[in-house]
Structures are given as structure tokens and as C-alpha cells.
Length: 179
Image (cartoon, rainbow, N blue to C red):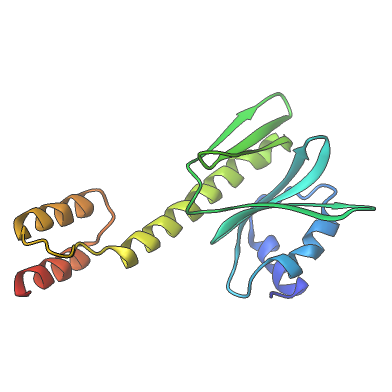
């Protein structure tokens, strides 16, 4: 688990931290984050009338709320499940909604100037996670399949969509052709 000093260093590196009334939640991050988890974006806002800290890491979205009497409340969504992130503005504040196909986490009363930096950093983390995940898990070989041309076409489609680099495409193609 990272130390409080490591966490504060990561927060200081983030350009627009809006951490209003969330110092207790930041301290709890030392217990919540894994050793290899890094903070990509964070902001504070309201969920159901309570102040929460939303943290996007390289692996998940974590929302934390420390109550005076009830301890720590935590909601999280792994990046591989998240389907979309939306936002809207009012005069001074706005909201951020994250959807995973079933659940929605909606953070309201987020300072307007903190919304776009959070959403952009979140989208970058999501893209990086998916791109790294896709490249390392791409396998075209299916048991009993002898349609090499079809498999090469699938590889070309993955490359065209940006899921494979040219080098990965060539390596997979060579595997198929050499057996």
C-alpha cells in the first residue's frame, strides 16, 4: 500500500485537484489503494447528500466517504467494466456520472472547473487500461480452426481498430502462417 506521502505527491502532480472536505478520505487511501495502483484523477462532490472523494486510478474508480460515526463507505468500479463517463455543468457546479452497464455512480456538486480535467484524465486512464489489456490478451487461435485467412482478416480488423500495433499484427500473422 502506498504511504500518505506517496498519495500526496500523486495528488500534487494532478493539475486540478478539487478535494473540498475530503481530507479524511485522502488519509484512507493508504488503506484502499494497492501497491501498484496510481492516482490518475480525483475530485470531490456529493452522493446522496454526503461529501465523497472520487479517485480514478490505473485500475478502477473508487468513491470514498468517511462518516463521523459509521466509518468508511466505499464504492468502486473496475475500469474493465466501465462503459461510459458523462458530465454536465450548471453555473458554478456540475455532475459526473460513470456507468458500467448496470450501475451508475453520480457525483453532484463538483466544482465546474474540476469536471473536464477529471473526465479527460479518466478517459485517458480508461484508454490506457483497455489498450494495454487488449494488446496483451489478443489471441486469435481457436481450437480446431483451420481458416487461417479468416483469422488473418480478424487480426487485420483488430489492427485497423487500434487494438494491435503493426508489430503485434505481424507477430500473430507469422504464428498463424508457420503453425
